[in-house]
Length: 313
Image: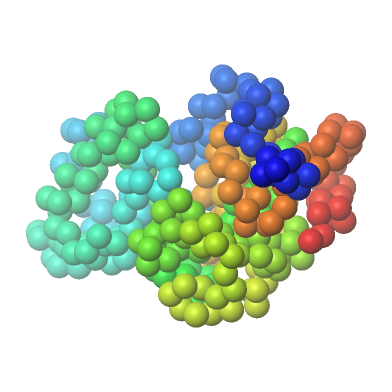
């Protein structure tokens, strides 16, 4: 009865996701375009997809001693692994304090001196946070500034917007809001709130927290369905362009809203999860099958109009 109910609701399961969509539409040789955030960044510049600036990269242990001067010249920044996943290995530096000789850094993990910061960078290089555990590279990146529309909708951290993009069509979306439980990370498995989004309007439709339906943010008490995401059409366009950019047919596209720059691509996932269906209280299969019936040469404007017309929750 349980599985019959899931089928009736059009829920996409793990096996079918892999067999019918990931393996079929994502060529293995193209995974490197999205699994390495440095490669993705370079690709975004060619295709005019907005991303936070990369200040510089650290590729080997020998560079660590030489970057002190570069780091203390930055007012704020973010450190992340090039091949990281699930938000692991990300350190946000809110402010550089102290002196040039003995700088200190106000970070998301508390106050750190240059020695502790160097150890953190060394851990990333060793592959501690990489997808495969292999040696990695370090990105020193522009810090995202929380857009004021999300005030009282997050506990620390930055919310992100996950799109499932199939053949260039943004078929489903959800907002992931950090909580105290998730330690400021926008990850549902770690305790973030997942909010389904009406593709037509950008309004919140349904919300889950730890697999239970909720109406208010568990830490702030803010009514979640009052939220309408700004720049919605631009977000849809940027998400759709990631298909043209990667030529991967079934991807998860994670976007953020910066206070000053608006929509910014955070990362692209070649193996997106399925909890977006819970957040939206509807299944992916009917939407994916509808896209299969469409012509393959539709222009970007037509694609967005189609999604807003057919996936109006």
